[in-house]
Length: 428
Length: 156
Image 1: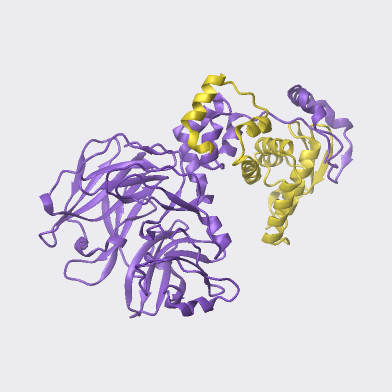
Image 2 (image 1 turned 135 degrees about the vertical axis):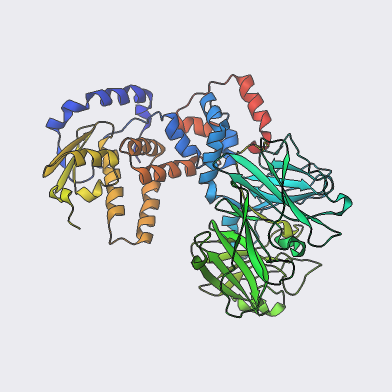
Protein backbone atom coordinates (compact mmCIF):
# COMPACT_ATOMS: atom_id res chain seq x y z
CA UNK A 1 0.00 0.00 0.00
CA UNK A 2 1.53 3.32 -1.04
CA UNK A 3 1.02 6.72 0.43
CA UNK A 4 -1.49 8.73 -1.56
CA UNK A 5 -2.11 11.62 0.76
CA UNK A 6 0.71 13.84 -0.44
CA UNK A 7 -0.71 14.21 -3.94
CA UNK A 8 -4.32 14.80 -3.05
CA UNK A 9 -4.09 18.56 -3.05
CA UNK A 10 -2.93 18.98 -6.62
CA UNK A 11 -5.08 16.39 -8.29
CA UNK A 12 -7.05 18.59 -10.64
CA UNK A 13 -4.24 20.72 -11.96
CA UNK A 14 -2.15 17.66 -12.64
CA UNK A 15 -4.87 16.02 -14.73
CA UNK A 16 -5.22 19.02 -16.98
CA UNK A 17 -1.52 19.47 -17.54
CA UNK A 18 -0.98 15.88 -18.57
CA UNK A 19 -3.88 15.99 -20.97
CA UNK A 20 -2.58 18.87 -22.98
CA UNK A 21 0.99 17.71 -23.09
CA UNK A 22 0.88 14.19 -24.37
CA UNK A 23 1.69 14.60 -28.04
CA UNK A 24 5.36 15.31 -27.72
CA UNK A 25 6.03 12.72 -25.06
CA UNK A 26 5.94 9.60 -27.16
CA UNK A 27 9.28 10.00 -28.85
CA UNK A 28 11.42 9.71 -25.76
CA UNK A 29 9.27 7.10 -24.11
CA UNK A 30 10.73 4.08 -22.42
CA UNK A 31 9.84 0.76 -23.96
CA UNK A 32 8.27 -1.81 -21.74
CA UNK A 33 6.16 -4.86 -22.36
CA UNK A 34 5.69 -5.60 -18.69
CA UNK A 35 3.21 -3.79 -16.54
CA UNK A 36 4.69 -0.86 -14.65
CA UNK A 37 4.90 -1.53 -10.94
CA UNK A 38 2.24 0.20 -8.91
CA UNK A 39 4.65 2.22 -6.83
CA UNK A 40 6.36 4.15 -9.62
CA UNK A 41 4.04 7.13 -9.78
CA UNK A 42 0.94 8.34 -8.05
CA UNK A 43 -1.81 9.44 -10.34
CA UNK A 44 -4.42 12.02 -9.50
CA UNK A 45 -7.95 11.04 -8.66
CA UNK A 46 -10.27 12.25 -11.40
CA UNK A 47 -13.42 14.30 -11.07
CA UNK A 48 -15.92 12.17 -12.91
CA UNK A 49 -18.40 13.65 -15.36
CA UNK A 50 -22.11 13.21 -14.53
CA UNK A 51 -22.41 10.54 -17.18
CA UNK A 52 -19.95 8.28 -15.34
CA UNK A 53 -21.47 9.10 -11.96
CA UNK A 54 -24.75 7.90 -13.50
CA UNK A 55 -23.10 4.65 -14.62
CA UNK A 56 -22.11 4.00 -11.02
CA UNK A 57 -25.34 5.10 -9.38
CA UNK A 58 -27.61 2.96 -11.56
CA UNK A 59 -25.91 0.03 -9.82
CA UNK A 60 -26.44 1.27 -6.28
CA UNK A 61 -29.47 0.05 -4.29
CA UNK A 62 -32.37 2.47 -3.98
CA UNK A 63 -32.03 2.76 -0.23
CA UNK A 64 -28.50 4.16 -0.54
CA UNK A 65 -29.53 6.43 -3.41
CA UNK A 66 -32.16 8.07 -1.27
CA UNK A 67 -29.43 8.97 1.21
CA UNK A 68 -27.08 10.05 -1.58
CA UNK A 69 -29.50 12.78 -2.66
CA UNK A 70 -27.82 14.72 0.15
CA UNK A 71 -24.33 14.45 -1.37
CA UNK A 72 -24.70 17.56 -3.55
CA UNK A 73 -27.21 19.29 -5.79
CA UNK A 74 -26.18 17.60 -9.00
CA UNK A 75 -26.51 14.15 -7.40
CA UNK A 76 -29.96 15.08 -6.10
CA UNK A 77 -31.03 16.19 -9.59
CA UNK A 78 -29.66 13.01 -11.15
CA UNK A 79 -31.24 10.64 -8.61
CA UNK A 80 -34.62 12.44 -8.82
CA UNK A 81 -34.75 12.25 -12.62
CA UNK A 82 -37.55 9.90 -13.82
CA UNK A 83 -35.32 8.73 -16.68
CA UNK A 84 -32.66 7.77 -14.17
CA UNK A 85 -35.30 5.87 -12.16
CA UNK A 86 -36.13 3.83 -15.26
CA UNK A 87 -32.51 3.12 -16.11
CA UNK A 88 -31.85 2.21 -12.52
CA UNK A 89 -34.72 -0.23 -12.52
CA UNK A 90 -33.37 -1.98 -15.63
CA UNK A 91 -30.08 -2.48 -13.81
CA UNK A 92 -31.48 -3.52 -10.48
CA UNK A 93 -31.90 -7.22 -11.18
CA UNK A 94 -29.33 -8.06 -8.59
CA UNK A 95 -31.50 -6.94 -5.72
CA UNK A 96 -34.68 -9.00 -5.81
CA UNK A 97 -36.65 -9.41 -2.64
CA UNK A 98 -39.38 -11.60 -1.33
CA UNK A 99 -41.92 -9.12 -0.29
CA UNK A 100 -45.02 -9.42 1.82
CA UNK A 101 -47.17 -6.36 2.39
CA UNK A 102 -49.58 -8.00 4.86
CA UNK A 103 -52.67 -6.16 3.72
CA UNK A 104 -55.75 -5.90 5.84
CA UNK A 105 -57.41 -3.47 8.16
CA UNK A 106 -55.24 -0.98 10.02
CA UNK A 107 -51.56 -0.18 9.99
CA UNK A 108 -49.50 -3.14 9.03
CA UNK A 109 -45.88 -3.91 8.79
CA UNK A 110 -44.12 -4.80 5.61
CA UNK A 111 -41.77 -7.72 5.66
CA UNK A 112 -39.16 -8.25 2.99
CA UNK A 113 -36.27 -10.66 2.53
CA UNK A 114 -33.27 -10.43 0.27
CA UNK A 115 -33.47 -13.38 -2.13
CA UNK A 116 -29.70 -13.61 -2.34
CA UNK A 117 -29.42 -14.07 1.40
CA UNK A 118 -32.15 -16.72 1.36
CA UNK A 119 -30.15 -18.61 -1.26
CA UNK A 120 -26.88 -18.25 0.60
CA UNK A 121 -28.08 -19.01 4.08
CA UNK A 122 -29.87 -22.17 3.06
CA UNK A 123 -31.64 -23.43 6.12
CA UNK A 124 -30.46 -20.84 8.59
CA UNK A 125 -32.75 -18.19 9.86
CA UNK A 126 -33.12 -15.25 7.51
CA UNK A 127 -33.60 -11.73 8.70
CA UNK A 128 -36.02 -9.42 7.00
CA UNK A 129 -34.75 -6.25 5.40
CA UNK A 130 -35.28 -3.29 7.67
CA UNK A 131 -36.53 -0.73 7.88
CA UNK A 132 -39.60 -0.86 5.79
CA UNK A 133 -42.39 1.58 6.06
CA UNK A 134 -45.65 0.78 7.64
CA UNK A 135 -48.52 0.85 5.23
CA UNK A 136 -51.31 2.85 6.79
CA UNK A 137 -54.61 1.72 5.39
CA UNK A 138 -58.21 1.27 6.30
CA UNK A 139 -58.92 -0.55 3.10
CA UNK A 140 -58.94 -4.09 1.99
CA UNK A 141 -56.49 -4.15 -0.88
CA UNK A 142 -55.68 -6.98 -3.22
CA UNK A 143 -52.52 -6.91 -5.32
CA UNK A 144 -53.42 -6.60 -9.00
CA UNK A 145 -49.82 -6.94 -10.05
CA UNK A 146 -46.44 -5.33 -9.80
CA UNK A 147 -44.05 -3.93 -12.30
CA UNK A 148 -41.06 -1.54 -12.14
CA UNK A 149 -41.11 -1.60 -8.36
CA UNK A 150 -44.70 -0.37 -8.26
CA UNK A 151 -47.60 -2.31 -6.85
CA UNK A 152 -51.01 -1.87 -8.36
CA UNK A 153 -53.65 -2.44 -5.68
CA UNK A 154 -57.37 -2.73 -5.97
CA UNK A 155 -59.85 -1.97 -3.25
CA UNK A 156 -62.25 -4.82 -3.80
CA UNK A 157 -65.18 -3.18 -2.04
CA UNK A 158 -64.92 0.25 -3.59
CA UNK A 159 -63.50 -0.87 -6.95
CA UNK A 160 -60.71 1.63 -7.34
CA UNK A 161 -57.06 1.05 -8.17
CA UNK A 162 -53.99 2.79 -6.83
CA UNK A 163 -50.28 2.59 -7.48
CA UNK A 164 -47.90 2.24 -4.59
CA UNK A 165 -44.14 2.37 -4.27
CA UNK A 166 -43.49 0.66 -0.93
CA UNK A 167 -39.90 1.78 -0.70
CA UNK A 168 -40.66 5.46 -1.19
CA UNK A 169 -43.90 4.93 0.72
CA UNK A 170 -45.81 6.89 -1.88
CA UNK A 171 -49.29 6.20 -3.19
CA UNK A 172 -50.72 7.61 -6.40
CA UNK A 173 -52.83 10.70 -5.92
CA UNK A 174 -55.40 9.48 -8.41
CA UNK A 175 -57.44 6.41 -7.65
CA UNK A 176 -59.50 5.57 -10.74
CA UNK A 177 -62.75 3.84 -9.86
CA UNK A 178 -64.47 1.20 -11.97
CA UNK A 179 -68.14 1.69 -12.57
CA UNK A 180 -70.15 -1.32 -11.47
CA UNK A 181 -71.41 -3.50 -14.31
CA UNK A 182 -73.46 -6.16 -12.58
CA UNK A 183 -74.22 -4.28 -9.37
CA UNK A 184 -73.68 -6.42 -6.32
CA UNK A 185 -72.88 -9.36 -8.56
CA UNK A 186 -69.57 -7.92 -9.76
CA UNK A 187 -66.89 -10.50 -9.14
CA UNK A 188 -63.26 -10.02 -10.09
CA UNK A 189 -61.94 -13.20 -11.68
CA UNK A 190 -58.46 -12.27 -12.85
CA UNK A 191 -56.37 -9.17 -13.15
CA UNK A 192 -52.98 -7.85 -14.19
CA UNK A 193 -50.75 -4.83 -14.27
CA UNK A 194 -48.11 -3.92 -16.82
CA UNK A 195 -46.17 -1.25 -18.58
CA UNK A 196 -46.32 -0.22 -22.22
CA UNK A 197 -42.70 0.66 -23.05
CA UNK A 198 -43.52 2.22 -26.39
CA UNK A 199 -46.03 4.74 -25.09
CA UNK A 200 -44.65 4.98 -21.56
CA UNK A 201 -48.00 4.07 -19.96
CA UNK A 202 -49.05 1.83 -17.12
CA UNK A 203 -52.10 -0.30 -17.66
CA UNK A 204 -54.25 -2.19 -15.25
CA UNK A 205 -56.59 -4.90 -16.42
CA UNK A 206 -59.45 -6.34 -14.39
CA UNK A 207 -61.76 -9.07 -15.59
CA UNK A 208 -65.17 -8.86 -13.98
CA UNK A 209 -67.65 -11.74 -14.01
CA UNK A 210 -71.33 -11.65 -13.28
CA UNK A 211 -71.56 -13.75 -10.14
CA UNK A 212 -75.18 -14.52 -10.91
CA UNK A 213 -74.86 -15.38 -14.56
CA UNK A 214 -72.33 -18.00 -15.54
CA UNK A 215 -70.29 -17.14 -18.59
CA UNK A 216 -70.96 -13.42 -18.55
CA UNK A 217 -67.83 -11.33 -18.14
CA UNK A 218 -65.98 -8.31 -19.48
CA UNK A 219 -62.48 -6.94 -19.15
CA UNK A 220 -61.90 -3.40 -17.97
CA UNK A 221 -58.68 -1.54 -18.68
CA UNK A 222 -57.34 1.66 -17.24
CA UNK A 223 -54.36 3.40 -18.84
CA UNK A 224 -52.26 5.96 -16.98
CA UNK A 225 -52.83 9.49 -18.22
CA UNK A 226 -56.40 8.71 -19.31
CA UNK A 227 -59.46 9.38 -17.26
CA UNK A 228 -61.72 6.55 -18.25
CA UNK A 229 -61.94 2.78 -18.21
CA UNK A 230 -62.14 0.90 -21.47
CA UNK A 231 -64.24 -2.23 -21.81
CA UNK A 232 -63.34 -5.29 -23.84
CA UNK A 233 -66.12 -7.78 -24.54
CA UNK A 234 -66.07 -11.24 -26.10
CA UNK A 235 -63.02 -12.27 -24.18
CA UNK A 236 -61.49 -15.74 -24.60
CA UNK A 237 -61.55 -18.58 -22.07
CA UNK A 238 -63.73 -19.24 -19.07
CA UNK A 239 -62.80 -16.73 -16.37
CA UNK A 240 -65.42 -18.05 -13.97
CA UNK A 241 -63.33 -21.08 -13.17
CA UNK A 242 -60.05 -19.35 -12.46
CA UNK A 243 -58.64 -19.96 -8.99
CA UNK A 244 -57.79 -16.98 -6.79
CA UNK A 245 -54.16 -18.15 -6.40
CA UNK A 246 -53.63 -17.98 -10.16
CA UNK A 247 -55.61 -14.83 -10.84
CA UNK A 248 -52.64 -12.46 -11.16
CA UNK A 249 -51.41 -12.07 -14.73
CA UNK A 250 -47.72 -12.84 -15.23
CA UNK A 251 -45.92 -10.15 -17.20
CA UNK A 252 -43.47 -11.37 -19.85
CA UNK A 253 -42.36 -9.55 -23.01
CA UNK A 254 -45.09 -6.94 -22.76
CA UNK A 255 -47.83 -9.53 -22.35
CA UNK A 256 -49.88 -10.61 -19.36
CA UNK A 257 -50.52 -14.34 -19.09
CA UNK A 258 -53.00 -16.54 -17.27
CA UNK A 259 -53.87 -20.23 -17.37
CA UNK A 260 -57.55 -20.69 -17.94
CA UNK A 261 -60.09 -23.20 -19.26
CA UNK A 262 -60.27 -22.93 -23.03
CA UNK A 263 -64.01 -22.31 -23.00
CA UNK A 264 -67.04 -22.72 -20.82
CA UNK A 265 -67.75 -26.30 -21.84
CA UNK A 266 -64.18 -27.51 -21.78
CA UNK A 267 -61.75 -28.79 -19.19
CA UNK A 268 -58.82 -28.16 -21.48
CA UNK A 269 -56.52 -25.48 -20.15
CA UNK A 270 -54.71 -22.93 -22.29
CA UNK A 271 -52.66 -19.82 -21.66
CA UNK A 272 -54.46 -16.64 -22.54
CA UNK A 273 -52.29 -13.66 -23.23
CA UNK A 274 -52.95 -9.96 -23.26
CA UNK A 275 -50.71 -7.64 -25.23
CA UNK A 276 -50.32 -4.54 -23.05
CA UNK A 277 -49.48 -2.16 -25.87
CA UNK A 278 -52.01 -3.29 -28.47
CA UNK A 279 -54.69 -4.34 -25.97
CA UNK A 280 -55.38 -7.60 -27.75
CA UNK A 281 -55.98 -11.07 -26.37
CA UNK A 282 -54.19 -14.13 -27.65
CA UNK A 283 -53.88 -17.79 -26.79
CA UNK A 284 -50.95 -20.18 -26.35
CA UNK A 285 -50.74 -23.90 -25.72
CA UNK A 286 -49.32 -25.40 -22.57
CA UNK A 287 -46.17 -27.52 -22.97
CA UNK A 288 -46.63 -30.98 -24.53
CA UNK A 289 -47.61 -33.48 -21.87
CA UNK A 290 -48.00 -36.96 -23.42
CA UNK A 291 -51.02 -38.07 -21.48
CA UNK A 292 -49.51 -36.90 -18.23
CA UNK A 293 -52.19 -35.60 -15.91
CA UNK A 294 -51.45 -31.95 -15.30
CA UNK A 295 -53.18 -30.40 -12.36
CA UNK A 296 -52.88 -27.19 -10.38
CA UNK A 297 -51.08 -25.38 -13.16
CA UNK A 298 -49.46 -22.13 -12.08
CA UNK A 299 -47.71 -19.60 -14.30
CA UNK A 300 -44.65 -17.69 -13.13
CA UNK A 301 -41.73 -15.69 -14.41
CA UNK A 302 -38.23 -17.15 -14.05
CA UNK A 303 -35.19 -15.35 -15.48
CA UNK A 304 -37.54 -13.09 -17.47
CA UNK A 305 -39.15 -16.12 -19.15
CA UNK A 306 -42.65 -17.42 -18.75
CA UNK A 307 -42.55 -20.56 -16.63
CA UNK A 308 -45.07 -23.01 -15.43
CA UNK A 309 -45.29 -25.43 -12.54
CA UNK A 310 -47.88 -28.17 -12.24
CA UNK A 311 -48.54 -31.30 -10.29
CA UNK A 312 -48.14 -34.41 -12.38
CA UNK A 313 -50.09 -37.58 -11.60
CA UNK A 314 -50.31 -36.42 -8.00
CA UNK A 315 -46.78 -37.59 -7.31
CA UNK A 316 -44.40 -34.89 -8.45
CA UNK A 317 -44.17 -31.27 -9.53
CA UNK A 318 -42.81 -30.34 -12.92
CA UNK A 319 -41.34 -26.97 -13.89
CA UNK A 320 -41.27 -25.84 -17.53
CA UNK A 321 -39.91 -22.70 -19.07
CA UNK A 322 -40.82 -21.02 -22.36
CA UNK A 323 -37.34 -19.88 -23.34
CA UNK A 324 -38.52 -17.70 -26.20
CA UNK A 325 -41.78 -15.97 -25.50
CA UNK A 326 -44.59 -16.97 -27.86
CA UNK A 327 -42.63 -19.85 -29.42
CA UNK A 328 -44.29 -23.15 -28.52
CA UNK A 329 -41.22 -25.17 -29.53
CA UNK A 330 -39.14 -23.37 -26.94
CA UNK A 331 -40.97 -24.95 -23.97
CA UNK A 332 -38.24 -26.68 -21.98
CA UNK A 333 -38.65 -28.94 -19.00
CA UNK A 334 -36.45 -27.52 -16.22
CA UNK A 335 -36.91 -30.00 -13.44
CA UNK A 336 -39.10 -32.54 -11.74
CA UNK A 337 -39.45 -32.34 -8.00
CA UNK A 338 -40.88 -35.15 -5.94
CA UNK A 339 -43.96 -34.34 -3.90
CA UNK A 340 -42.05 -35.32 -0.80
CA UNK A 341 -40.11 -32.02 -0.79
CA UNK A 342 -43.27 -30.01 -0.56
CA UNK A 343 -45.22 -31.98 2.02
CA UNK A 344 -44.70 -31.40 5.69
CA UNK A 345 -44.45 -35.00 6.86
CA UNK A 346 -41.58 -35.49 9.32
CA UNK A 347 -39.79 -38.08 7.22
CA UNK A 348 -38.73 -35.50 4.69
CA UNK A 349 -36.45 -33.96 7.32
CA UNK A 350 -34.24 -37.01 6.87
CA UNK A 351 -33.77 -36.23 3.21
CA UNK A 352 -31.13 -33.72 4.23
CA UNK A 353 -28.40 -34.98 6.54
CA UNK A 354 -25.97 -32.09 7.05
CA UNK A 355 -28.38 -29.26 7.63
CA UNK A 356 -31.47 -29.08 9.69
CA UNK A 357 -34.59 -28.18 7.83
CA UNK A 358 -37.04 -26.64 10.23
CA UNK A 359 -40.70 -26.15 9.56
CA UNK A 360 -42.55 -22.92 9.81
CA UNK A 361 -45.11 -23.15 12.55
CA UNK A 362 -48.46 -22.90 10.90
CA UNK A 363 -51.80 -23.83 12.34
CA UNK A 364 -53.44 -24.39 8.99
CA UNK A 365 -50.88 -26.71 7.52
CA UNK A 366 -52.04 -28.84 4.65
CA UNK A 367 -50.19 -31.96 3.75
CA UNK A 368 -49.78 -31.05 0.11
CA UNK A 369 -49.72 -27.65 -1.54
CA UNK A 370 -52.52 -26.85 -3.94
CA UNK A 371 -50.27 -24.62 -6.03
CA UNK A 372 -46.54 -24.18 -6.24
CA UNK A 373 -45.26 -20.75 -7.12
CA UNK A 374 -41.76 -20.68 -8.67
CA UNK A 375 -40.12 -17.46 -7.57
CA UNK A 376 -36.51 -17.52 -8.64
CA UNK A 377 -33.93 -19.75 -10.24
CA UNK A 378 -30.23 -19.25 -9.67
CA UNK A 379 -27.42 -19.90 -12.14
CA UNK A 380 -26.54 -23.17 -10.50
CA UNK A 381 -30.07 -24.48 -10.87
CA UNK A 382 -31.40 -23.83 -7.39
CA UNK A 383 -35.04 -22.94 -7.54
CA UNK A 384 -36.90 -21.01 -4.89
CA UNK A 385 -40.54 -21.99 -4.69
CA UNK A 386 -43.42 -20.97 -2.53
CA UNK A 387 -45.80 -23.76 -1.63
CA UNK A 388 -48.44 -21.09 -0.99
CA UNK A 389 -49.66 -22.69 2.20
CA UNK A 390 -46.95 -23.62 4.61
CA UNK A 391 -43.41 -22.89 3.58
CA UNK A 392 -40.96 -21.79 0.96
CA UNK A 393 -38.52 -24.30 -0.43
CA UNK A 394 -35.09 -24.09 -2.03
CA UNK A 395 -34.50 -27.05 -4.26
CA UNK A 396 -31.38 -27.88 -6.23
CA UNK A 397 -32.14 -30.17 -9.12
CA UNK A 398 -28.51 -31.25 -9.63
CA UNK A 399 -28.10 -32.59 -6.11
CA UNK A 400 -31.74 -33.38 -5.48
CA UNK A 401 -31.41 -31.48 -2.22
CA UNK A 402 -33.79 -29.16 -0.52
CA UNK A 403 -33.58 -26.47 2.10
CA UNK A 404 -36.28 -24.60 3.92
CA UNK A 405 -35.39 -20.99 4.61
CA UNK A 406 -37.15 -19.80 7.71
CA UNK A 407 -39.13 -16.66 7.30
CA UNK A 408 -41.42 -15.00 9.76
CA UNK A 409 -44.27 -17.24 10.76
CA UNK A 410 -46.55 -14.21 10.78
CA UNK A 411 -46.35 -13.87 7.05
CA UNK A 412 -49.24 -15.04 4.99
CA UNK A 413 -47.10 -16.62 2.35
CA UNK A 414 -49.93 -16.55 -0.17
CA UNK A 415 -49.06 -12.91 -0.56
CA UNK A 416 -45.33 -13.27 -1.13
CA UNK A 417 -44.23 -11.30 -4.13
CA UNK A 418 -40.97 -11.15 -6.02
CA UNK A 419 -40.01 -7.51 -5.90
CA UNK A 420 -37.30 -5.14 -7.07
CA UNK A 421 -36.95 -1.87 -5.20
CA UNK A 422 -37.24 1.14 -7.44
CA UNK A 423 -37.27 4.93 -7.48
CA UNK A 424 -40.19 5.03 -9.92
CA UNK A 425 -42.91 7.42 -8.78
CA UNK A 426 -46.42 5.99 -8.51
CA UNK A 427 -48.42 8.20 -10.85
CA UNK A 428 -51.43 7.32 -12.92
CA UNK B 1 -10.70 -17.08 -39.84
CA UNK B 2 -7.83 -15.12 -41.37
CA UNK B 3 -9.13 -11.58 -41.34
CA UNK B 4 -7.69 -8.86 -43.55
CA UNK B 5 -6.42 -6.92 -40.58
CA UNK B 6 -4.30 -9.82 -39.36
CA UNK B 7 -1.26 -8.20 -40.95
CA UNK B 8 -0.88 -6.17 -37.77
CA UNK B 9 1.31 -8.14 -35.38
CA UNK B 10 2.02 -5.77 -32.54
CA UNK B 11 0.29 -2.69 -31.26
CA UNK B 12 2.19 -0.12 -29.26
CA UNK B 13 0.20 1.87 -26.75
CA UNK B 14 1.73 4.99 -25.31
CA UNK B 15 0.37 6.21 -22.01
CA UNK B 16 0.08 9.81 -20.80
CA UNK B 17 3.30 9.57 -18.83
CA UNK B 18 5.15 8.23 -21.84
CA UNK B 19 5.37 4.59 -20.79
CA UNK B 20 4.97 2.21 -23.69
CA UNK B 21 3.14 -1.12 -23.91
CA UNK B 22 3.42 -3.59 -26.74
CA UNK B 23 0.39 -5.80 -27.04
CA UNK B 24 -1.15 -8.26 -29.46
CA UNK B 25 -4.16 -7.17 -31.50
CA UNK B 26 -6.61 -9.40 -29.64
CA UNK B 27 -5.84 -7.57 -26.40
CA UNK B 28 -7.12 -4.25 -27.68
CA UNK B 29 -10.29 -5.61 -29.28
CA UNK B 30 -12.41 -4.32 -26.47
CA UNK B 31 -10.82 -0.87 -26.60
CA UNK B 32 -13.06 0.57 -29.30
CA UNK B 33 -11.18 3.86 -29.34
CA UNK B 34 -7.96 2.02 -30.15
CA UNK B 35 -9.65 -0.42 -32.50
CA UNK B 36 -11.14 2.33 -34.67
CA UNK B 37 -7.68 3.84 -34.92
CA UNK B 38 -6.19 0.52 -36.04
CA UNK B 39 -8.98 -0.09 -38.53
CA UNK B 40 -8.13 3.11 -40.35
CA UNK B 41 -4.51 2.12 -40.84
CA UNK B 42 -2.97 -0.54 -42.99
CA UNK B 43 0.38 -1.21 -41.44
CA UNK B 44 2.29 -4.00 -39.74
CA UNK B 45 2.91 -2.06 -36.59
CA UNK B 46 0.82 0.62 -35.04
CA UNK B 47 1.74 3.10 -32.39
CA UNK B 48 -1.11 4.75 -30.56
CA UNK B 49 -0.82 7.59 -28.05
CA UNK B 50 -3.35 7.46 -25.21
CA UNK B 51 -3.02 10.90 -23.60
CA UNK B 52 -5.80 10.36 -21.09
CA UNK B 53 -4.55 7.11 -19.58
CA UNK B 54 -1.69 6.84 -17.14
CA UNK B 55 0.94 4.14 -17.45
CA UNK B 56 0.13 2.15 -14.36
CA UNK B 57 -3.59 2.33 -15.15
CA UNK B 58 -2.98 1.16 -18.69
CA UNK B 59 -0.87 -1.68 -17.29
CA UNK B 60 -3.82 -2.81 -15.21
CA UNK B 61 -6.26 -2.51 -18.09
CA UNK B 62 -3.96 -4.60 -20.30
CA UNK B 63 -3.61 -7.18 -17.56
CA UNK B 64 -7.41 -7.34 -17.34
CA UNK B 65 -7.81 -7.60 -21.11
CA UNK B 66 -5.18 -10.34 -21.37
CA UNK B 67 -6.95 -12.43 -18.77
CA UNK B 68 -10.35 -11.94 -20.35
CA UNK B 69 -9.18 -12.46 -23.93
CA UNK B 70 -7.55 -15.77 -23.01
CA UNK B 71 -9.41 -18.80 -24.25
CA UNK B 72 -7.55 -21.15 -21.94
CA UNK B 73 -8.80 -19.52 -18.76
CA UNK B 74 -11.95 -20.97 -17.23
CA UNK B 75 -14.88 -18.79 -16.30
CA UNK B 76 -14.11 -19.46 -12.65
CA UNK B 77 -10.48 -18.40 -13.05
CA UNK B 78 -11.61 -15.17 -14.68
CA UNK B 79 -14.06 -14.49 -11.87
CA UNK B 80 -11.35 -15.16 -9.31
CA UNK B 81 -9.07 -12.78 -11.19
CA UNK B 82 -11.77 -10.08 -11.26
CA UNK B 83 -12.23 -10.42 -7.53
CA UNK B 84 -8.52 -10.05 -6.79
CA UNK B 85 -8.15 -7.31 -9.38
CA UNK B 86 -10.69 -5.11 -7.61
CA UNK B 87 -9.42 -6.06 -4.18
CA UNK B 88 -5.95 -4.68 -4.68
CA UNK B 89 -7.18 -1.34 -6.03
CA UNK B 90 -7.60 1.78 -3.98
CA UNK B 91 -10.62 3.99 -4.52
CA UNK B 92 -8.56 6.46 -6.59
CA UNK B 93 -7.47 3.65 -8.90
CA UNK B 94 -11.07 2.61 -9.46
CA UNK B 95 -12.19 6.09 -10.39
CA UNK B 96 -9.31 6.56 -12.80
CA UNK B 97 -9.84 3.16 -14.38
CA UNK B 98 -13.52 3.94 -14.85
CA UNK B 99 -12.60 7.15 -16.60
CA UNK B 100 -10.00 5.36 -18.69
CA UNK B 101 -12.60 2.74 -19.65
CA UNK B 102 -14.87 5.53 -20.80
CA UNK B 103 -12.11 7.18 -22.81
CA UNK B 104 -11.05 3.89 -24.39
CA UNK B 105 -14.73 3.07 -25.00
CA UNK B 106 -14.49 -0.33 -23.31
CA UNK B 107 -18.09 -1.22 -22.62
CA UNK B 108 -17.78 -4.30 -20.46
CA UNK B 109 -14.75 -3.04 -18.55
CA UNK B 110 -16.63 0.19 -17.85
CA UNK B 111 -19.56 -1.78 -16.49
CA UNK B 112 -17.20 -3.89 -14.43
CA UNK B 113 -15.55 -0.84 -12.88
CA UNK B 114 -18.86 0.96 -12.32
CA UNK B 115 -20.11 -2.13 -10.52
CA UNK B 116 -16.97 -2.30 -8.38
CA UNK B 117 -17.37 1.33 -7.34
CA UNK B 118 -21.10 0.90 -6.74
CA UNK B 119 -20.34 -2.07 -4.47
CA UNK B 120 -17.90 0.02 -2.50
CA UNK B 121 -20.24 2.95 -1.87
CA UNK B 122 -23.50 1.08 -1.30
CA UNK B 123 -24.66 1.24 2.29
CA UNK B 124 -22.05 3.90 3.04
CA UNK B 125 -22.73 7.30 4.54
CA UNK B 126 -23.14 10.56 2.65
CA UNK B 127 -19.85 11.75 4.17
CA UNK B 128 -18.04 8.65 2.95
CA UNK B 129 -19.31 9.22 -0.57
CA UNK B 130 -18.33 12.89 -0.60
CA UNK B 131 -14.85 11.95 0.51
CA UNK B 132 -14.66 9.11 -2.00
CA UNK B 133 -15.55 11.29 -4.98
CA UNK B 134 -13.92 14.46 -3.60
CA UNK B 135 -17.24 16.27 -3.70
CA UNK B 136 -18.02 19.34 -1.63
CA UNK B 137 -21.63 19.76 -0.63
CA UNK B 138 -23.31 22.77 -2.20
CA UNK B 139 -26.35 22.54 0.07
CA UNK B 140 -26.80 24.99 2.89
CA UNK B 141 -26.89 23.25 6.29
CA UNK B 142 -30.64 24.03 6.43
CA UNK B 143 -31.28 22.51 3.01
CA UNK B 144 -29.35 19.40 3.92
CA UNK B 145 -31.11 19.03 7.24
CA UNK B 146 -34.47 19.26 5.49
CA UNK B 147 -33.49 16.70 2.86
CA UNK B 148 -32.36 14.30 5.53
CA UNK B 149 -35.59 14.78 7.39
CA UNK B 150 -37.68 14.12 4.29
CA UNK B 151 -35.95 10.80 3.76
CA UNK B 152 -35.39 9.99 7.40
CA UNK B 153 -36.34 6.34 7.12
CA UNK B 154 -33.56 5.63 4.63
CA UNK B 155 -30.95 6.81 7.11
CA UNK B 156 -31.97 4.38 9.85
